[in-house]
Length: 174
Ligand code: ADP
Figure 1 (cartoon, rainbow, N blue to C red):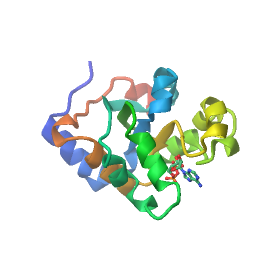
Figure 2 (cartoon, helix red, strand yellow):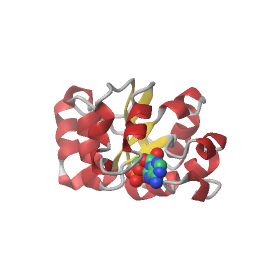
Figure 3 (cartoon, rainbow, N blue to C red):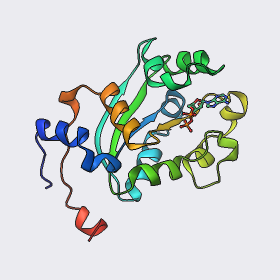
Figure 4 (cartoon, rainbow, N blue to C red):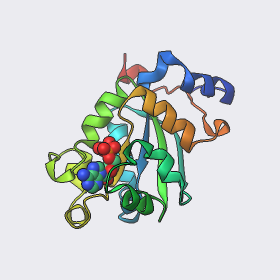
């Protein structure tokens, strides 16, 4: 029922250029977790034929979000965003599939959820909270193959990166 790729091969696969566009790091932030949206978000990716290959729940240390959002360190909302991210459990995931970054970003949609169309994750699930706290998005997704690789390496230890082949792929890509 699906071949498990060895941890070593998985690590090489994650860091290999050939698969770079086929994996994305997705985080359901603590407000998404607390509101019971984990299964809904997972379902949105699964329904499009993407494969969940790595998942864990983690409460980041105080400094950890600063590493994740290092490119935003000059922005005025940086400290608030980092404090928020380290204040509760986050679901960290790696999803795999053809075009997963391009489509995943389309599915997540605009940084400002008020501008996200219904049917996208932010447009559909981010409601009242976002009006009150604009920096508290419920989901993060890597925007480029290079960022996906960096984020996966930041959030997961090499031994946590294990992949597998899925029998559903013949129906999705066949
Ligand atoms: P995205 O999450 O859409 O990839 P960014 O990486 O630019 O967007 O921003 C990271 C997070 O920082 C966003 O999800 C949002 O929570 C917050 N953020 C971005 N821009 C602003 C802003 N102008 N004001 C407040 N919070 C913001």
